[in-house]
Length: 149
Picture 1 (cartoon, one colour):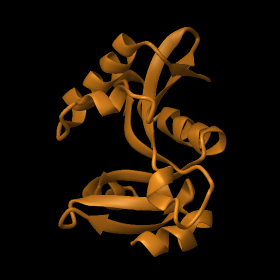
Picture 2 (picture 1 turned 180 degrees about the horizontal axis):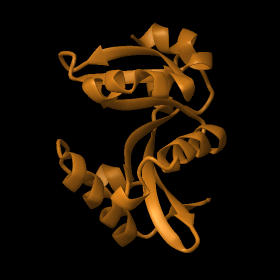
Picture 3 (picture 1 turned 90 degrees about the vertical axis):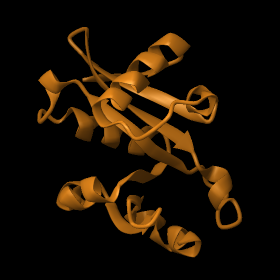
């Protein structure tokens, strides 16, 4: 599996629309496509499998650390490629290559897949937005994340 960063706005919008159609709950805005966000695409044998969108949260933690802090905010894998390790590979790729330290998702989705996310290193977490959403953090980022909880 190969990974590329998407730079064309039309491609970013295509993948974001797939996410919205599948999961709803967000309204697209210009910030989703700005320099604060990056779209990473998984490709295998010339086929596009899925994507992950990450956004820069460094300023949110700047009083506690000077390290870059990126957050996984959206992910989508085409139905034909689900349960084949695509999402896991995407998440591992952005953790290793894009300073991803955290993930933001619905509380239900996170808790229903707690072992999966723990296996990817997201072991410190707390809820926000009246318990509907979850911030989860990489183990090595726990001390810094705890200062912001």
